[in-house]
Length: 399
Picture 1: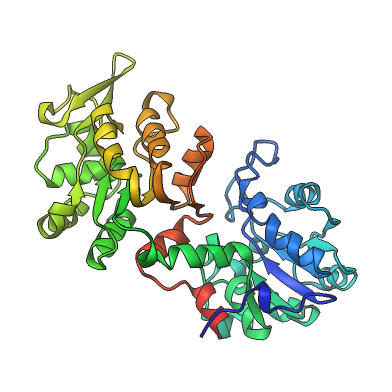
Picture 2 (picture 1 turned 180 degrees about the vertical axis):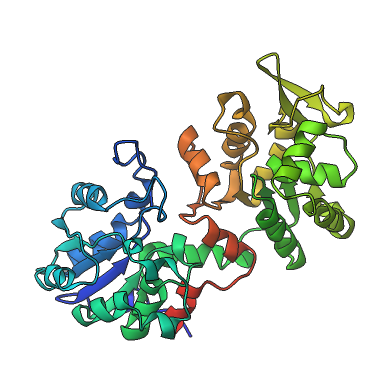
């Protein structure tokens, strides 16, 4: 069944529960360190408010017990600055105080409800029908006429605010959600050839992407970088030295070497490995050809080198599609940022380019790189779609 979008929603005078994902990095003082996720939802919220909707915003920030776990007052204040409509805040989510705040909205007004994860049920996962029986849903749903989910970044979760409310209310996809599903769900229709650049440090997830896109015929080539590439190099018999091998072992990824070896055996003609790596030597960046490994004692492969960037660059430019999923190295350290920066800058010259969210999107924001056709707002959700998984918060919108 097709998912209804804002095009199908009669907005004027309607009270809407709008789930967004504004989970953002915070400073030590609790201020927003990056408002990219808030800005991503401006189009959806502006449209609903301009069309006379009464908007109750649901969102979360951080995880219970974490130092980023905080109220949403700061987020509400920033949304009030970003939107050409009044945005209030209440420190309640589904209580009588929350319902009064929602019921007091006028057309074209919004209120940000308190962090959904302040309530234990929201940090648990349920089937949709059970989620609809939680206190959050039973308390808030009577004050709403419809539900809009724009929180693609959380769509791989099955929590009450994501899957319970659309059981009780007519459900619609917001503009962020709609765009993400169109792009990431329609990769088979993108220009060919298709190249996936797979890196980062989340090896099991990344190998799942590699396996999925190759098995489904979505990728003509997979270029490996980051810790993922190190695992493939070890699987290919390359001696990366004890420091890199120990890191992979300590992260619990040792068994992934066998998985990478199986992928090389089955799809080796479409999986490319780095030609050189960068290590730290005497406080500086030092690049070593793979043929000249292992490095000196204590040196770990922290980035791809210039030869790899040049070789990969020839593949990610010109006709076809490139999908970036994971940075090429420890990009947070300027010593090892060069591979990620240069490769990602080169990828903007592709005919069609997609950034897979999470650390990948964080890297392009850090470097100020623009020119991609689509930058996903999701990390885990984008990964799930790239591996062909169904997203609970999307499936419940299908009814």
